[in-house]
Image (cartoon, rainbow, N blue to C red; front, side):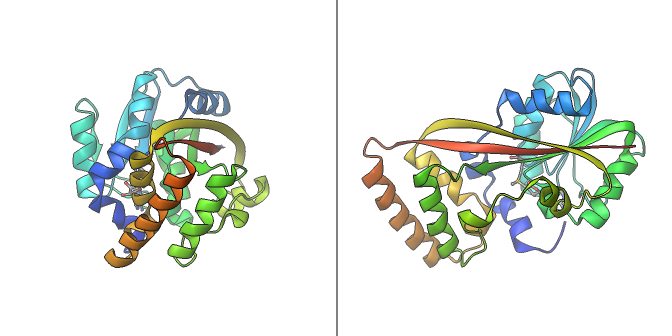
Length: 255
Ligand SMILES: C[S@@+](CC[C@H](N)C(=O)[O-])C[C@H]1O[C@@H](n2cnc3c(N)ncnc32)[C@H](O)[C@@H]1O
């Protein structure tokens, strides 16, 4: 794994991650099937940066034969516990521990950004069979929702801009492809809006499981959450919030 403390930070908070992070909507799996031109049932899939197995579980539920690849020891352990029938291998997207031309699909759910595309793109293309697909996606926050936009500005301030302010977050299609390091490949993008309703505690734990917050020092983190809880309590007196997301998914086809 990279030496980047943010890429490694998830391993320090696996239980919090598993209990508070959002999953992904069924429309995402439908889009992956449509854009890759292949049903998930029976497909050979590597889910890379699998973490606690949130996306792995959804791929399995669609009938895919999934191997989970995860560099973090604690994350990999948690994934094995959650999905006992799924092979979980320790490994890195920059040097996949997988045979060449062996897979129909390689997926990265919220994890592509921790790889170096100069290495992870050729690696994905190496392990995919001809006509296979690389699918990468993120649950991005819907910044047209005013309270989420205001919260993102507070997070950006608390993390000194490590989490970007809302107005800098959504690139256009060409920039999204370029930023992902996928220039030169046939890539299709979809944006899929969805939401979930959770308690304030789950919402705050979710915010706290983000790498930019995990790497804050203890005093700063405690101060941020005390303020954040007070702001949200005032806006949501019943302690329930609706988190709105836009899944940003890019699917690249192997020639
Ligand atoms: C935000 S979590 C996403 C976990 C899971 N895919 C999900 O949807 O919840 C990012 C994951 O990427 C992993 N990761 C960090 N560096 C990586 C790398 N170079 N290659 C693959 N995965 C990496 C982390 O250990 C972590 O489990």
